[in-house]
Image 1 (cartoon, helix red, strand yellow):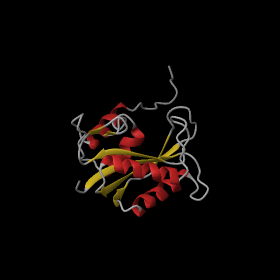
Image 2 (image 1 turned 180 degrees about the vertical axis):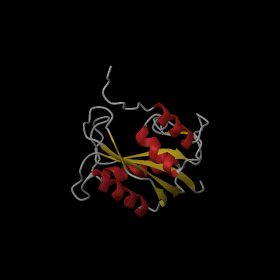
Image 3 (image 1 turned 30 degrees about the horizontal axis):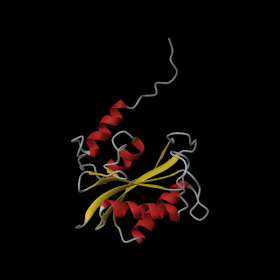
Image 4 (image 1 turned 90 degrees about the vertical axis):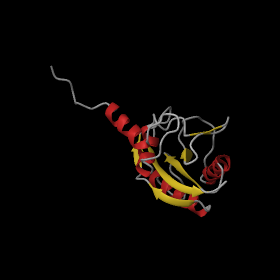
Length: 169
C-alpha cells in the first residue's frame, strides 16, 4: 500500500501521572504518534465536550491529520498500542479514559471489517469528532453520505439547539 492520509480522533478525560490534564495528554499523544513515524500534517484545536454515557468528566477532544504507509488494520493496532502505553484499559464502554484514539477518516474512502469501520461510525453524528475532523480536512467527502466534512459540520451547526434562556410568558 502506498502512502495514505488519515484523520485520527483523540480524546481524554482522565489525568495521567506524567502528562497531567486531558488537554496535555492530547498534545502528548500527538507527539507519540509522530514518534512512531507517522507524518503529522496538521492538528486541530482541542475542544472540551461533555462525555457520552456513564462518565461524568468532560473530554478534551482533537484530531490529527497523518500520512502513513500502514493499511488501516495495522494503523489501528499501532494506535491501540499507544493507548495502552498511556494507561488505557478497555473494560467499560464509554467510561472515563486516559486516551482514546480513533481512525475517523481515510483517503482510501471506506473500510469495513468486524473490528474496524472507516469512516468512523459516529463521525457525522458526534460533534466532538466532526468539529476537529472538519477543521483539518473540510473537503474530505464522506463516502457513504456524499457530503464533505464542512457540509456535515454546517448541518450539525444548524441543528444544534439554541439556548434562549428562561422562558418568559
